[in-house]
Image (cartoon, rainbow, N blue to C red; front, side):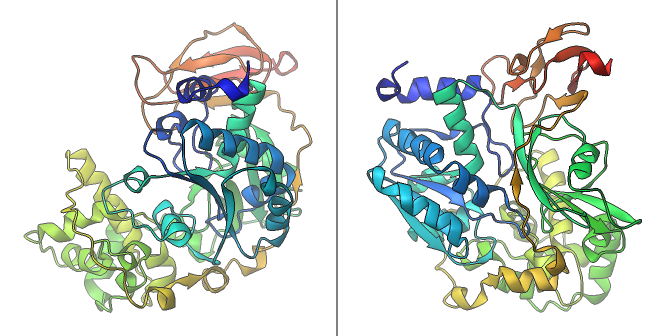
Length: 451
């Protein structure tokens, strides 16, 4: 195969066949993001959540591979340029990119401020290009596609090496003896990965899968997917854990009694600062006071990016606007409600720069300063005798199993597929072994030694 002769349709086909999805977010199938009309590609190395260490280290170790894949995507999309967006504090990463970037035409570096959530697509596009993605629209509406660093590395592996996605890079940190970043087989149990970080050093703890701002409580038995980015061990009485365990109905009752309508949740909201109509304080007022006639107060909830700033940083009364808004969005979607943007874009808040939240201050405020330490990348093979591979590791339709109990499976073999042209991702085995369980949700594979 001549890489230089590939067109966008062939590149998209290869990416789809290899099961590449967004590795840094909700798992949107990458082939579906690559469309005509893109004049700029942004490589997202913002490492949005505090404590994440994956992308900055991958871009150091695989600089050439990532830039090669980024250049290929730029060429096949006929884009004018690509921008490597990196937080200015990632000096080693910037140095690694600067040593290689001169080899590629129309690829440049953009230094990002160390603010949260600069990795959010809408915020990232504004900080990088000064363009505003209107509420209810996608980056393509302003001629941009945003790709995560690990996603682009997976594109390289797919297009240049014909390797499907079978592993995930994950930072393991918090109350562990040896914070590290590992390359883990998809489907491995989180408990096994914690052992590679030297185990937990406290007795009473909870596991947070994802970042401290948006992650969810997990267990040792939960398994790694294509979107698992970080595992954080926290004391069970940590405020982050308490917030996650709080019943939304209790949050509403607390809001009814003490919400002062100070507007801080709105004044510091990153989307509101860019002119979007989302106003958390207005939503809190309508819900806590049962003002059902205020339709706008409920409909604007759909424009919340759920970054968590409102509840983790802004609210001086420890209320949980994000949790309430998240529950509201679920109910609205279940009832067929869709975004009702009037497509009227307000101006960017004049005090936006002054209201941006520095990550260092955020880390201190949410009580994870002690965990803001190096987690070096270790790529030694992680061995496991069993994986449970989810058939839904992406936005879109669930993959259908292609194997049955007793089948012998090789690493990289296709075991789950998307049917009828639906949006989704193909699923591949991450180990050699024998299928021991299949249902509509997952496939379990054990090595022969693990039988």
